Length: 262
Image (tube, rainbow, N blue to C red):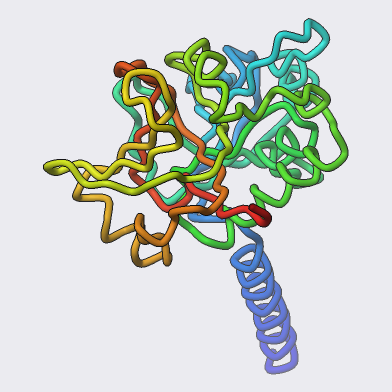
């Protein structure tokens, strides 16, 4: 009896240690947040939404759809090939459904535990959303996007994916879409509760970034003081709006990347 007890105790200790190691390993993986359940994917709704066999709709967070004129680029088809009939596990910081009842999560395909968002970025079929506030997770996603860009995979085979601030008409053509825009900041000016990063001298034609007052502290904490961006080349990501000239509103530090060169 004592020997059996000792054997059971040893097994329990080994299992407990193994579980702790697994938890620690997952915690070290970028974007591996709190478990939100598992299930099997039965359908792909769009480029970042799937339906589970139990009826749940899951929205892949951390990415934005990548738009391209090229007919051979089909993010929805890629997602179908990756997930239909596969079991997945879901992680996230908050399991509260969005206003459409969808579960917002990072999706990990089983059994290989592939982070689907990172794979889509790696294939050049998505763009990183600036809503990811965890630094390690955001860095991992940005690295995957950068790898695809350097290799000219997917959308990155098209050199016009990143719009140039010197061509405001091209930016305005993407009104309502999530886009990347690059250029040199001409000036940073405040008007009322809004700070403007101007990339040209014509208010009614040229591209500008708008930063509401409540976002300034968040940017400053990341070392992004608007005045310090003057004469620097930056890349901005966000939704294009038509307000006289084309605009992107910046609310988070992840929307601005400082680039090298003049």
